[in-house]
Length: 227
Image (cartoon, rainbow, N blue to C red):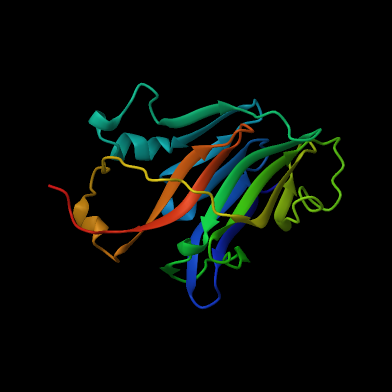
């Protein structure tokens, strides 16, 4: 069996888009992976069949680009968690990717093949949900179709008969509040890189009360270097 994959993004049809994503399972494996194309092989989320899940740097990137002073005792792992409790018998909401209406701002062609969703209305966001469904659990349509009016992005089956479903729906953008932090750069990067293009794409990681994890695909602006 070849690699199974679903690729998706939000784009407005006039040349602007948000980040692009890939959810996949390598040939002969039961594990599910999620990565953002714009990160270019920096990190990925791994949903292992064992139920031990994590988001981590790729090993080569971590060893070559993350300075020693920015490493922690967790090594290349950014977050670790256990598979959440199913939200319904045999149905696990594994991960969310949320794209606010303001984030469709990259002027670049959409790589193919990618499933395209139109932008959310002002004040809202497009939420992509990754579901894992057990082999013995019947699915009528796709997860959330009837109660949340979700729409299908794509799905594939795993060798053990379980299935991976990606759906989308428009939600109200939550208030994330104001966050502060200190900028850190990988080896070979610096403030000069922030000046190129003016608009910055940023990924904000979080966790939900149901045990799933979420990434917000956001943008920012460069306002000057720090000294």
